Image (cartoon, rainbow, N blue to C red; front, top):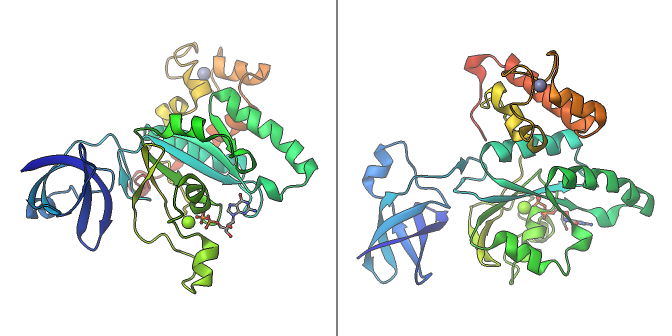
Length: 300
Ligand SMILES: Nc1nc2c(ncn2[C@@H]2O[C@H](COP(=O)(O)OP(=O)(O)O)[C@@H](O)[C@H]2O)c(=O)[nH]1
Ligand SMILES: [Mg+2]
Ligand SMILES: [Zn+2]
């Protein structure tokens, strides 16, 4: 019988496919054909498969992807929690902007989740207000770890029917967040794994978990995000506040740096675009422009 479903786990050469109608999970193998082409099945892939018995099957086709990430290896990601710690390891706004551009370039909706707010003094929490409102004004949803209770409905609305990942540096609280969201705590956090003596890097395979009617993957941390696969002319499209002004500068190919009658620079001057975000844009623009073509890395 030919069925369709989504790969929810990949482990030891097997792909675990959740069938679309029954949600029954089949253990499948890739057909030989996949090994000879460029396409390797990824967690998140929508696939066709034939069943050989009530629990096993063989993949027959991988449907075209909306996007794919390398770290974590997940395809068709709709939404990402960008987990940013405000205490140790403290994230810089520049790095937040870099993650946001990376996610926007893949067509993934970012949700900014600030972790470790509980470790801040009252004074330091006051100082977070500017950071939070900066990203909210751009249109991003911001959650704080200290304000997660009571947000179930809002989270459910965001996550429902979506494929979701948590991204961010190692040790910021990605696994902790996913455990907060999950009905049963299945993901190992640094603390748990240390007590088991297994060291810090615990997220060994990628798996989509059922959360609020959606599918969520934990991921190992990464922070060296390549952005030089992005054409520099497209970079402003991944800053929503600049995208909103696209086409309004005097010059069609305006880089928003040296050109006269640039609406982006004007918006920075009036404060409608923040100086920090503009500086992030300029820094990334030069990084892309200066990258030697054969050194250009692929997206991570
Ligand atoms: N105080 C505090 N500790 C946190 C928070 N989130 C995570 N941690 C701790 O930070 C460490 C790393 O968390 P973990 O979820 O494993 O980080 P990951 O590497 O991003 O998955 C663990 O000891 C967690 O208990 C938070 O919001 N507040
Ligand atoms: Mg983790
Ligand atoms: Zn311009």
